[in-house]
Every structure is written in C-alpha cells, then in structure tokens.
Image (cartoon, rainbow, N blue to C red; front, side, top):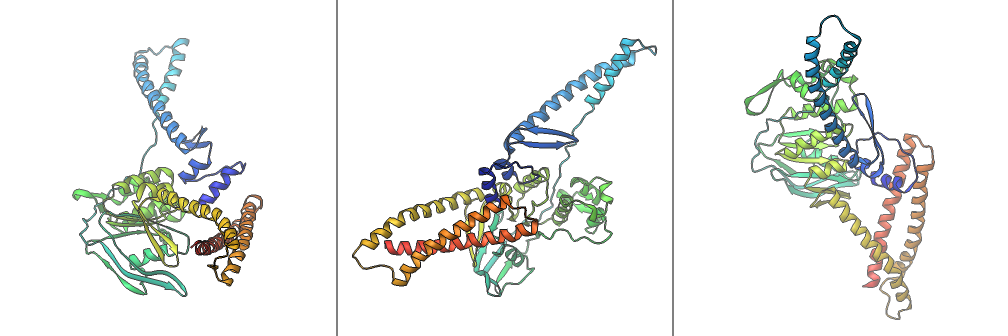
Length: 438
C-alpha cells in the first residue's frame, strides 16, 4: 500500500507536507526536507540522500566555526584579564564582542545517542527447529506442515499482507500459542527476546525508572561489569528528570524506546522484532540498525520499513496467504525486483495471448479448451477489464474525496479486495491461455 501511495504521489501534482520516519518514502517522494534541530529550522532542497549529505556538511562547518571561536575566545579572555577597571568606549565595544564570542565558543551539539550493550549467552549448535507446523483458524489455513531449521547468526525478514499469518508464526515460535500439529524444538541455550506490536504493558502510576527496577537495581553488562537502572535509562536517552515521569505521559516513540530497553535487558540471543520501527525517530532507528548489524545472535524481523529491512536481513520468509510461505534468498529490494520482473513477464505473455486466440479461432485443428472453458476465457477478459476500471476509479477517489480515517480504512480494504480479485482472475486467464498454446 505504501508503494502504491508513492506511485500515486509521483504522477499526481500534489503539494504534500508530511512528517514521517519512512526513509524510502522521503527518498522517493520529497523534493524538499525541513529539519528542526535544537530549536532552529534548516531547509534542504532535495530528497533524503541530499539531506543527509548537506546536513553532514553543515555540522562539519559548525564544528569548524566553533573551533575558530574557541581559539579567539582564549585570546580575548587573556585581554579581558589584563584590562583595568576604568573602561574606554573602545574597550567597552570589545567587551560586548567578547560575550558574543564566548557564546559561540561554548556552543555544543546535543548529539547523545542510544547506547546498546548486551551480555549475550553463547548459542549452541541447536537453535530452533520447526517440524511440520500447521495452524488454522476456522476455515483459514495459515501454516500447513511448515518446516525450517534456524542456524546460528541467521537474519530473516518476514513480509506479507495483513492476515497471512506473520504474527501467528512468531507466537508459535515463542510458544505463546500452540500449533494444531507439528512441534517446535528450541535449543537449551536459546534465550528469546520478543518485541511485539502490543508494546509495553503500562501499570497505573508507574514511573519510567520503576519499569527498569523490576529487573533489578543493577543490570549486568559484558565482561562482568554492571550498571544501575538509572544509568541504563540514560543510555536510552532518558535523562534523570524524565526517569521520574509517569509512563503514561511518554510519547509514542519514548514508549517504544523504553519497551526496547526492557526487551534487551534480558540479554536475548534470538531476537524477534515485530514492527520495531513504528514511532521510532530516525536517530534512534540508525542506532538500532547499527546495533543489529553487530548483533551476533539470530534475528527475525517483521517490518514495513523497507530501508530497515534492506540493511538488516539476509533472506525473507514471504507469507503469500493460503499457507504458502516462500523462502526468498535476498533482501526486500531484491524481492521487489524479482516480483516486478515476474509481473512484466506476465504482461508480455498477455500481450501475445490475443494473437494466439485469433489464430485458435481460425484454426481447423481440434480445440484445446472445452466449450465451458472457452466461455470462461471470454468472460474473464470482460471481468478483468471492468475490475481494472473499478480499481482506477477507487484509486482516484483517494485523491479527490475528503474521507476521514475510518472511511480511508474501509475503502483501503475494498481496494485490496479488488486487487486480489484481479490477480486471481488474471492467474486463471493465464492458465487458460497456456492451455490454448499447448
């Protein structure tokens, strides 16, 4: 849906003003970025890559100017110390300048970053084995005799439409729910860390530091070191004052950061992240990515953040629905290239198909489709054309109608149903075309 929205904005002449942490979206859609940094607004006439480049140059330039100001400040400070109490007009002007130089020299960036550190237990040879896992809810089959053995250090991304079984799979893996059949075998040394979409469980009247103190006043780190609950929170950008705020007062991003802290405090060696990037600011995202790139354990990630997925995972579980789970050898961008090439091949086959149809009608050889199949083939062409028209009309309404959030959700579901129906009918049409050619 995000990719569809990107394509819509690319071809329509909209004026857009957005706040988003989706870096691919910023890269593909925006032609200007405004940054709010320490109370000042900076404008960059370009996309996200351009912004990163120019922001880095700006910060380097500021650091250079601050360095020059510090040298000048030392020189002026010596002059100030030598001055007699009686001041002339000229010296008064220089004194005023001194205070301005002092402000410039003492300017420092508040560039504190989240610091993540684990005392992870070494993982044994047996990690997690899934043996013929099946799971259904009523008539809806999500997994059917699924098998997989995880290896040490594996980094797997999970993608698929809503309702195809992604969260169910994670819950089975962590024993939150039981499969209908099959079994999950977990190695003795495996310690799960499960970051769920539900987020942190807030207790009434609980303060930020109370959440961490539930795990102890002191938390073990690497090489036998330990850290206090307060010091750990400071590493996750909660200053001493913020630590005594009530949890319910935190912003969405702050709650996510605190929840991440509670997951990592358990020192997991098999980390499961279900939509970890929602509400996290870009700075925290960059730090989380750096930490995960160095994470030596197993990693399983469900995310709509394509930039995040591309950096973190080595291969994908693609949940296609109806219990079909494909193991794709590559990251998300690799998968999109693969999918787009398949769509292109089908289109090219579809363009050639009408010629085959005309030849088939004129051919005196025996028909390769039954009478009912011939009727179905002709009917499918009309149905697909009508559905594509309905899809286009509904897509245009997203741009023209003043829908509220509830209506947008409702119409999004309707649009997805039309897209799924078109895909199913096109697949059947290709089957019949192939039969005709055969």
